[in-house]
Length: 344
Image (tube, rainbow, N blue to C red; front, side):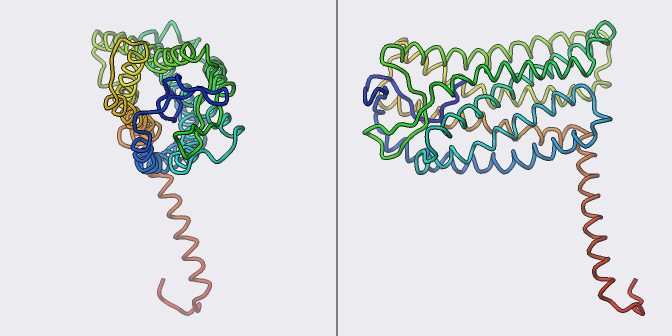
């Protein structure tokens, strides 16, 4: 999965030690990004901050009654929450170029990649946890203790931290001669540019989509087979939420990975593309990547509409907050009114 938010580069234009290729019509693509990205990212930012923030608050507040699966969901919400916090920086880049310096370029790229990978891998953890809880409920009882869950979350974060190190090393700020704005993107040497580009693309597609979705589908095939044999589908309410998470993940990220796969084939020379097709590929990558980022704000909405427990806790929290405000307003009004009033 590609985490760079810059335009497509073919690495055949050398300037100041960095390699860039002039797109066919960079003005058209830049104008499209400057309008499309701020609109979509603003929506994702607002929904992602409030939705994931509420989910984190509810799970953390009821920590004594949460299940082991809730621990994975908490880490998933944290990853999505931190991910959307980086979106304002990319919105500014789309409109005015990168204005925050090299250090922030590396840090924001690193945070973005870290939480993007972890968000996806925690979905795998949730699927595998459901597999253990349903298919191997008796045999795996002692292996699903909280200490093992927390150890798994730590391993996921460390692994994603390793993957995101690429952004700390190779991200840089650069302004090509054909652009009027600076961009925060990957930069490689002349000899290794094509190799790095291909390697990163393969890593993003394999670890960011194809391997996770294969693992999730395998888990759910075994789960459904077990439930079918036991005839207890109606008792697995939690499974509806988790399956919905996986389905939304596929809908959001499959188009982007298809576009990225086509782009990889084009870079390898397997597909010949003219100028118009290259521009269409650039725009398609922006649109599908934005659709993928929408995924980070949809998980709380799924819990609100499908998860009975989360919806109940959210309504209870809102009711409690509203009652406190009403009580506070009433007390202030009562203190200002004469005691002889018979209004109440």
